[in-house]
Image 1 (spheres, rainbow, N blue to C red):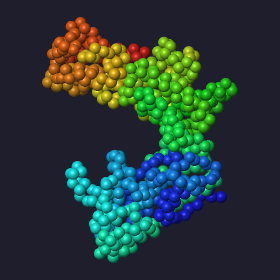
Image 2: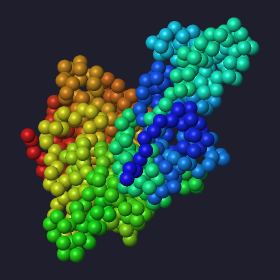
Image 3: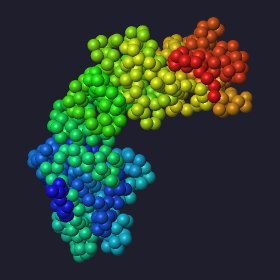
Image 4: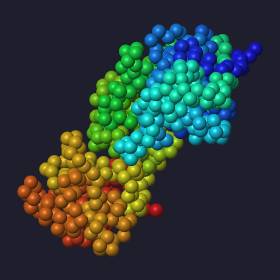
Length: 599
């Protein structure tokens, strides 16, 4: 027995049902409208009776129960319970509802994603010049129904009143399905164009009014597993649904709104879990997938332990997993059981990262390390949220973390690594496990240090933070730099031997631009350094009335950055470069807990 029907429905009837609330969206679906150029292209395709793809709907009232919401910008007050839900074609239908059925401006974007308001019009004379002119005939104005140039100073086209529309023969697309009221106004403001309008109605508007949309309608008795599979497969014209959206669909079938739990809802008075986690600045970039992965790893670890306790062996034992398939299989009960305690695990992870001297998400070498760190913290701190601070536990956590960063092991696909990390790191911390493979795998090649020049590199970010963690003081302000960051003083990573000076001395860029010649300092200190030789700018810094440091005190500040003092004061770049490389390599060895090797 078939679980779906295929049919066609006039576009105007489909949009009427959307505005009337008979057709709505599952609440987890993205609230998207296409960008301005895509909107125009869609309108041209309809006007020329080109196919724009089928739409898939699901009958309500069956086993699959979703939280629902109206299509974007359709007023929700007084709407009935929907008869059907949009599974595929949401972007097209949302776009067409806004353009053809609603009176306000269309909330769209530029090609670069900048939000803009637009009204869409068809220039009647151009449209009547031939079907191939429709692309030229359809135009978009701004939210004031105007087109401006010269940075908004010059009005090129003004359609801000019905009279101006009629006089210039620009027909609003929002009137396509009910053109008679505009015709009446045309008869008042431009009666000589009425016959031209009737031709326009026949040649152009009838194509829109008669346009048929192919429909696939899943029947209400479709099993929820099949519906979730459909969600994963149908997005042929848009971005594939994320793991979070698919899990949301699955949980919604059991009456649980994961979207509300993560993003919050003013309508249903639900506080956002994401917002609570993001109150920790360092976790501001944490995504729903990170949270789901952390829970999935702990749920599968629990299953693995139960299998081993039951005497299972080999492939009978469930693996710890963070893979997409495992996240999609995460039971709702498991999510509910773990969510609160894992949220606390993320908060403990933030405390650890702050202890390691990270203050903002942009300084994190790898966001992908947060999920395993949070999962491990969840288990360590179940009974005592400060247990991770115990010296032996903290030392093991820090060694694992820095091996991952400096070994550059968390780029690309890391689902297998993070799952192994959770199981192995917990076993190691509790005292009965071997070294986690991330520690064994990590290797920082000595030659790598000289090639680190990009602040986007994980190892580059990590070494900078290690210098801060080791107590680097600013060369201007009398404070550790980590304290300046907490006070929001402007900081950055700057050259120790200035770029201008190095270029004048003929020093290769690959040397002067590497992290060996850089260190974190305040904007104020960098301004005083300028392009001078170190011997010159050090004298200037020391004599400044807000600094007033003798040589011994300044040398102490320099050493807090692992900067070799003697070659710096002697403007000897080669000796400085060699000695600071050794200093930084020693810092890296201590963080990783292992000796380094050259290629």
